[in-house]
Length: 358
Image 1 (cartoon, helix red, strand yellow):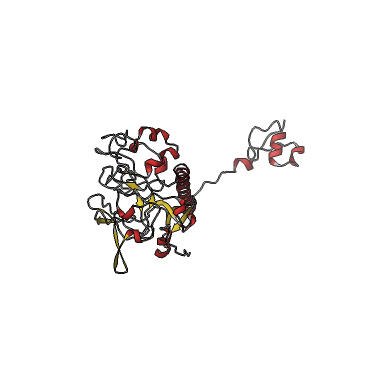
Image 2: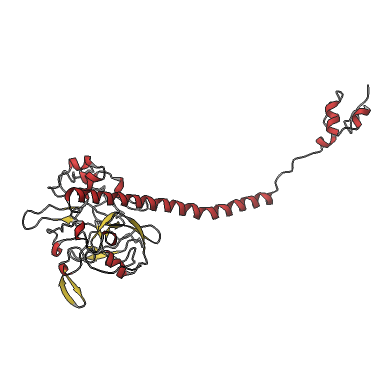
């Protein structure tokens, strides 16, 4: 029997020499070890430098991809916001089809048999698939009294959660969940045009005129009186439904108490409206009734104290570069925050006869 070399692990059979080492190993029944080539082969490990290079490359790739991922998420949130405004627009049109007018912007008691304190929101519940809320509510009772608000709880009609109220980009916004008057806030508000809330007279070119002498918005008060809510139909929109703003966005207060009325869409004294006196996302501070806003230092929502008849709030959002708006024809568009003030003001009126440029 042939001897096998301890150095080569190769059989002495002549017929094995023409084979490769590994083939000879497989063919010879006398081989009991691996060929020299296999014994001396070793797997080479990564060096520390190579590992650090790989980690650095992964870090660069993540840094390159992260902005794209964040941008995609922001775009998705903006599209969600767009879809919510479209649903509000559909609700407005359904209300108009049923009542032959748009819902009242807001109302308050006054001379005669006027509606109680409330806003446009409660009129639209039946048209946004919230008939249960509409059933427990009573539009003949002020929003801050039962069944609108069940004191100390969120059990009232205004305390019910409605996803359509909220823009997904305003994560900092908070509902009023503390104290006696608990209710939900919202990001979607109606167009109050080019007059201040509660204003009866306005100075134009150095002259004081009645607000009734100015072009109107679809949601406003006759002569600025809160007990005279304007009743508007699409026939009143002589500027055209596609040229007249219906709704836009606002930013909600960030505290859970009744001390910040921004986004207080159920409250006829709250910021349930926006004004086209200022461009979207302006750095100019909103003017809110003294004592009814919290200064959070958030640069997106500056505010200063104003009088009861001096309130003005701009359209605001956390979308980069502008706001979503709903026009009276039901279409939704993204408006750049750099829009000309003249163009923006023209879109805020329904009967101004302005020529709207780009």
